[in-house]
Amino acid sequence: MGNICRSPTAEGVFRAQLRKYRLEGRIEVDSAGTHGYHVGEAPDPRTQRAAAARGYDLSGFRARKVAPGDLEYFDLVLAMDKSNLEALKRMSPPQFANRIQLFMSYAKNFDDEEVPDPYYGLGHGFDLVIDMVEDASAGLIDDLQQRLESRAAAMFPDASLKVPAKSR
Image 1 (cartoon, rainbow, N blue to C red):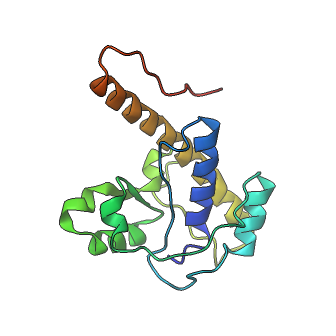
Image 2: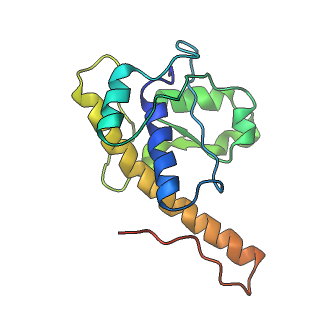
């Protein structure tokens, strides 16, 4: 909603995953809130502490609100919960609504459809958000690697171009 807890966590974790798989520069990532409550503010201090404990630096992030052009510009727009999903779909021109999905649809180890908002909860909620976001980010990386490989194969059918394999 306000882009100070879940979304910047997801952006920071996903950026780290892009670096890990050498995909930075090939995939653009950003985060924004559906409400402008905290525009210009850094992520919630509890979010930053939980992220730092896992090796993610969110200190450079600043909250912003979804801009009308975002829904046209980005190929994929991921919502943290159903409320934000519906808000994004209402904002979106009809031809771009299919780009909007729940982030947790990429998770492999969590059955939850939504990432819970830890803002009003206890401290452990921020750790849970990171667990969920790490899982969904890994699934999203897998999906994007397959898409990139498919595009490369379609563009260069005689080339043996591969996206870097997942390190285990």
